[in-house]
Length: 70
Length: 273
Picture 1 (spheres, each protein chain N blue to C red):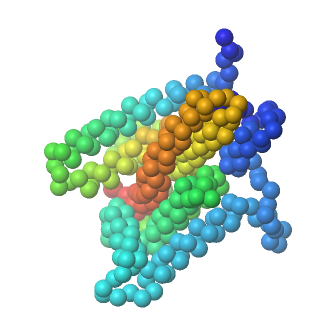
Picture 2 (picture 1 turned 45 degrees about the vertical axis):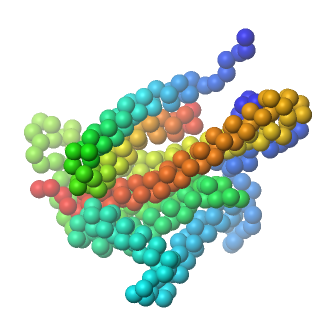
């Protein structure tokens, strides 16, 4: 068997991606539900959804940057 | 095969392009400058920055040079883009005052869009926003604008509203104020820059790895056999799919950066009392 290679920061990045992954799923799912219930508010919901995704995603991206720094 | 590509530091194979893909190296090292102007070394990234700014100006100039009531294709695209930024971002988020920030937001959006587009442009293949200096500078620009706008519009009550937030129990005010202070003045510009940077770096590295894997597999058919070599085509197909995905990421990240700039300006202008 070959020797395992890699850095612990890879695992760290994987862990950092779990929370934002779940969070973005919740945001997008609820946005789809809102758009389906009230199609005339779709534009507003979409903008707010992007904002929410952008804020949630920040944690995963910080993990990604730390992976490079480590 | 993946070891060949990822082990860029210590491998000494004959083909240098395999060990150290040029684009990947460019992300982490200073490239040798192409030429110097007044002692400032000019690298490829600097040239691309100016090219992106020039293309953004050229796009708007050519589109609006001969404005007519029967717009052509170019004028229509420029106008619809400008209307989008004005109605959806500037006025839509900030409110009627947002029209004052429309020129900044439009230039930000166009520059980021073209700068990100370089990621999937053939023969360039390098998004300028994958260099931390550029998103960081743009986010600091946004930071200066929203702090300045807040002080200009609300005076000292802008700052006091952050460090001594109204509507919070007195016992919690110092704690909430401290958190708000750090989140607004330090975490905001940092996360704004990192979001753009990390998205573009991830896409760029992914594309480079996939395309290099495909290239190496197919070109080394002679040594690893036909069946293994043709697996490279699968990687190549995946890379093409990622190209489509990156197109969405490019548009979305330019949009989100501009949108968040507008949101930050909005929160410092329209403070809830």
